Length: 149
Image (cartoon, rainbow, N blue to C red):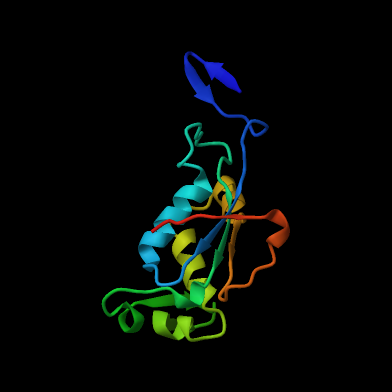
């Protein structure tokens, strides 16, 4: 821990990282993604320091049962380009949830709420583990279940 002119800055050695478990069943996508991005950055801790990874490791289960309000399942789309001429692709949120990897919808929402293209944001995003079903492979870390509703 270091002090500079009365201001506290956390060191990587002084940061306490926890394992948190969140059940995403019947939760609204945007509200949940905002809370997760805040916890990944560590802004919920009193010793938050913008240039240090203060965030927790977060395991999310039941990502396939997330809710969207309004007509977002049909109207909102993710776009990407293959790199070839005329190669723009699109997929609606409904197609993603009913597809092979429904957890990608939540991962993309959280990633887009993190700071853009910085090494620290990439490091913090790697602390997020999203699973479509209720089983996960982080039992050894003993994540504590938290209610973010």
